[in-house]
Length: 446
Ligand SMILES: Cc1cc2nc3c(=O)[nH]c(=O)nc-3n(C[C@H](O)[C@H](O)[C@H](O)COP(=O)(O)O)c2cc1C
Image 1 (cartoon, helix red, strand yellow):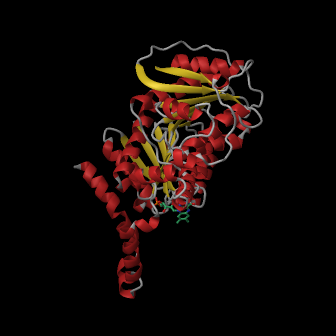
Image 2: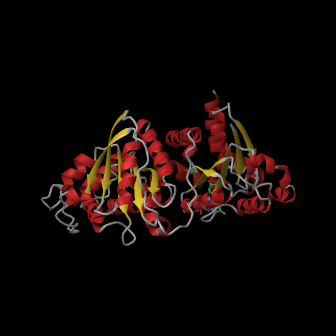
Image 3: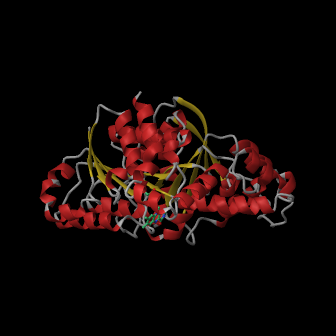
C-alpha cells in the first residue's frame, strides 16, 4: 500500500507528530511510506505544486500529520490545503486520515476541520488519531497508536469509511433490507432503546443492526423499564452508591449495564435530544457518580431524525463517549446511507468486541476528566465512592505530582539563561526534545 504522509509541522523532520507516523513505518515495513514536508517547504510547493500532484492522487492512504495550532492546524498546512484546492486535487481513490499531537486543547476542532476538507477532496475518511505530545514515549501511547493503525488497515481492507454528510433535512423513513448474520461473537451487548409506537424508521434500523452484528444484542426498551422518577439531586448516593428510589434501577444499572461489553443507544430525535424518558435513564445513572464505570468498552448510537442540523446533539454524543472512556464505534442515522452505515458500524462494533481497543481521549474527554478530578479531590470527604474509584484508577494525575518533569524543566530553563549554553544549543532544542521519541523508534527496530 502506498502511504503518503503530509507533514504539516513547520518543524519538518523535527516534528513530534511525525514520529508517530514514522513509528507506523517501522511497524509496517512492507508498506511504501513517503513523507512530504509540506509545511516546512510551503514556499517551494507554492511554486512547484505540480511536482507532487500525482503523488497525492496516487496514494492509497493519505495521512495529514500535524500539530494542533490554536484550535486548528498550522497556517502552512491551511495554505497547503488551499493549494490542493487551487490545483483541483482529487482524493477519490484514497483513504484519508489524520494524526496529531497536542495537549488536547481543542484538538477536536482541528480534527473536524481536516475531516471537512477531506470530504471536499472526495477522500474516504477514516477517523484520526490525536495523541498527547508525550504519548509515543509511553507504553499506553504506543498501544493506542498501534490500535489505531491496525483498525485503519481493517477499515481499508473492508472498505469502511465515514460517509460525507449531505445536508438534507427531509429524512426518508428507513426500511429493513439487510440479511441476518450468524452469531459467532459471544459477548454481552445491550441496546437501550427509547422506541415508541410509530418510530418505524428507528425500529427498522434497530432490527437491521441487531441482525447484522455477529454478536447477540439484547434490546432493552426504556418503556418496559421501571423508573419511578427523575434524579432528585439529593446526593444520598455519593457515599453509598445507592439511590433513594426503591425501583431497583441502581441495581439494574450496576449489575446489568455495568457488566456489558458494549452499549448501543437507539432513539428518535425529539426536542433536540430524545424522549424525556431517555434523559430520565441518563440522570438516574448519577448513582454511579462521576465514575467512568464503562471505561474501555464501546458505545454506538442509532439515531433517527435530522441529526445534521443537531450540532449540539452531535457534541453531546462525542463528549459523553469521551468522558466515559468509551470507544465510539459510530453513529448510524437514517439521514444518509443508513444501510451502508449499519454495515460499517456493525463491523467496527464486532471488531472491538473481539479485540478491545482504546483511542486517546480528545479535548472533551481530557477537559471533562480534569474538571471532575478537581471536583472529586476537593469533595473527597463526601464523594467517597468517587474518591475511592479515582484513587484506584490513577485519575488524580495532578501535574504537580510529576516532580521529575517539573525539576527537569526548572533545570533546563535555568541552564538556557546562560548565554554560552544558549549559543551552543541554538537550533538544537528541537532535536534535544526529540531524543526520547527517537529511542522508541530505535527500540522498535531491534
Ligand atoms: C503556535 C502554536 C499553537 C499551538 N496551539 C495549540 C492548541 O491550540 N492546542 C494544543 O493542545 N496544543 C497547541 N500547541 C502545542 C502543539 O500542538 C504541540 O506542541 C505539538 O505536539 C507540536 O507538534 P510538532 O512537533 O509535530 O510540531 C501549539 C503550539 C504552537 C507553537
